[in-house]
Length: 422
Image (cartoon, rainbow, N blue to C red):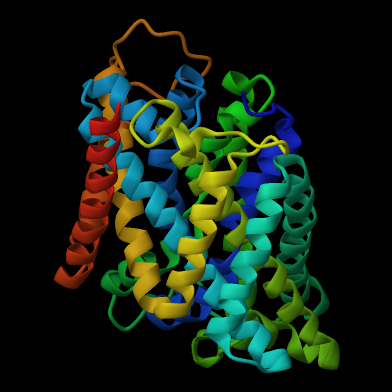
């Protein structure tokens, strides 16, 4: 039974924008300000460039292979090695599950600050609620995502309006070209943190089988999502450091609430509620994407056929259930820093593989509705994507790599068990 194709350009773009503008900008802008100072906007711009290198590769490949389990499909088409394609797909699927746990813990932090409660129980509870919504169906999930995405964007526009319009002239006369004390290294350190705010754009490609005219719509939605997010991020960065200064921004636990507090007074708490929707929505999107990854790999025969079963709601219910239970357990058992690093490591490994796939397939005669820029027929941005992903991988500590080895070991066990039963 195939998945339902119910998403158009608007919903797919909002889906991508919603997963990008989630926990990252609301939670990490203060950390980034502490590293990059007044040049915070430049850190967002550099992060966007890195994302666009890989985003263009995803856009072209999604127009060639509009399937679920995008990274798995791309790698298998290029290298013809099921083991390699499974490893890439499995790492990203589990990385996306862990990313859902990360933003659930972010949600719990905001929620407990407002209402009290045990953060880890709140995080696990959110995962279970979002898992139920994931099971109900993609149309209903998209409706929640559309509402939440609009709310997230509205929250950032409030920050921009207060920074540029309501509070003009700005209280802090920030020199936006003043380098941080640590120089360019400080900006790059900020990039290593802030890039989390862009992670998720690749999940648009994993929704291909639920998008109408996916060969045309998915590439457009992916690039539109990145463009919208980048413009908003840079405006928010400039408005924030100009409004309160990078020092105050870096010391605040609720940085965007701090930016609007003077102008909105007691109503500034609205930013915390928007942050709740932002993190909940991001958790939902990560759960959707990871369950579709498992569905796609099972549909191709690399995982047990049970994970490809479609229920009466038109969703892969066993994949949805497994992803939800794992994400809830991880959010309850670990801390936000550890899970964020694990998710980042898996994602950058997948980015490296996707760019390598485009390099291999660049000269093929396969039909494609979109083509990334070429120089003498060479996809130069894909090469830059490989280089940038490799550089980012060098920043992870040994214990993170050991955790990824364990994740691969679990995947290898499931892979071999499925092979023996076929």
